[in-house]
Length: 205
Image 1 (cartoon, helix red, strand yellow):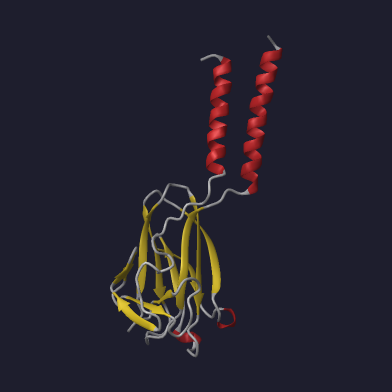
Image 2: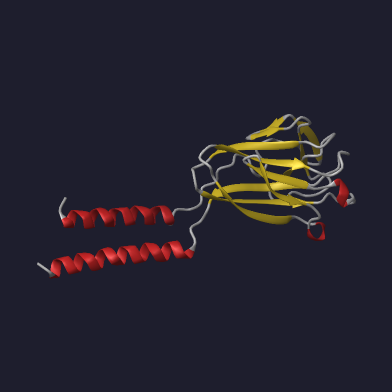
């Protein structure tokens, strides 16, 4: 292959990498806001599963403006239904790919901290345990995760006293991570290097 073709190939790779680097994050979860399941205002109900989510042994409690107001939309969930329960969603990952998890949780009003709390698992390992939301309002948490190339489970588990009163959960999102500013700098440097080499090659003729 001629040197000029090598330069063109390198430029193409850089441009493709740039397109990927500047691409918007892709949402990987289904029904992260729990709005896909209709629930009448001022009511709640226990479900075996919700759209996109598989419930644990004691199901998933879906609420619409009951003992709290949703962080977004109208619905939110609680995982201490009749007893402590859980829910999960499997996501096909890319080996070594970084992902960003965000969610909001809120302690149930008038309920002891010992009765509340959520464990968050990724691929079978706990990555966080949350409880005692700030000032009793919705609190946002963000975590960086890494894929192992398999279908990995994102799982939320109620951890407080198993008494049907637990923490609320809403607005769960899992996206491909946005590249850091250093990534953009490396991209620009790479494109600049391609240009310099091409100019030197042309001047040497």
